[in-house]
Length: 262
Length: 179
Image 1 (cartoon, helix red, strand yellow):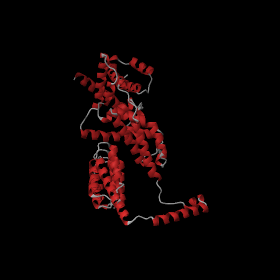
Image 2 (cartoon, helix red, strand yellow; image 1 turned 180 degrees about the horizontal axis):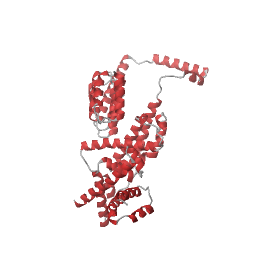
Image 3 (cartoon, one colour; image 1 turned 30 degrees about the horizontal axis):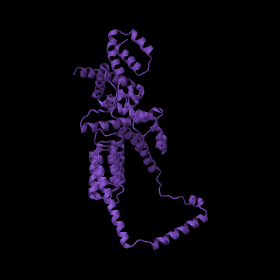
């Protein structure tokens, strides 16, 4: 038996493809000199069994997964803006409808009589502006945190802001270009795309294309460019195609995006 | 997974329950850190949900999903490895911290513990791809055929590479032992 054949049989035995008896039978036909190297390797292979066992993960891992799954479920089942009136009317009898309308009218009347004064309205508007400032500050603070979860939360907070000022945009752009976590960068692409009406955001997204090395982020950026119909991104996307190490799926996606944009 | 792709996201919970521990073990052996492994497992399942439409049907059955999952896991590990390299290399002390809790006063235990520490160091000296192949074969109990599917090479090539990996591991181990 050649050394190569013997090695192959040993590899099969180590992987459980042949039994111990079969291996012993092959071994008995081999030259003892041939076996010495394999014995050294076997020692290492068996010693690997002694390494510290894998512990159980913390319960937070499951919690995080189920929270993520529920987010995706929400997205997938979000109403598309169509209301099935026929099924609603089927459930409601005319008595219920009449009662509902009466309550609505009475509520409207009370609302009219008790509507807040101008001063009160001003207070509410100043309060909501303070709330906006607080959210903004919280977002900027969380973006600096080392924990990925915090930074993800920060980016999602930006979606609650009706308007984004230069500080918020600048922080998000910096996150997109320099955060080490792929998930954070991906959600930042989505967050920035929501502010796509600002020219500086579009510009930042375009110039980020060449900076990203993660295939996931590259795909997210290509998708964002299509969603924003940003024709200025074509050159940057073409530049991406010139990279030799570009992932095949990304290449396909980028080509599709260029076709849509041109 | 095809059902998940078609929109039945509840099936992802089943896939998670079936595979999360194995995936955690894979990352734990690679990184030696529980918290990092938890993060990486989460990243893999996040990518599965996000990119579920990239999963393609195959006649080879359930192995196809496992291959896809480990393909994503390898990408996640590569991203993590790049990031670690940027930050600077640090040896994670978590597994050794856990070991310290065990009573290991006896000399023989200590010697054994040192040998294992060397072995673990030697494994970390291997290139990430080699570590992945070693872990999939040794600890994930995968057949060469499955590993070949994940790496996109032939079964024969896996055997040859695995043999070289073990030879390299032994050489590195012996070198470290002399230091």
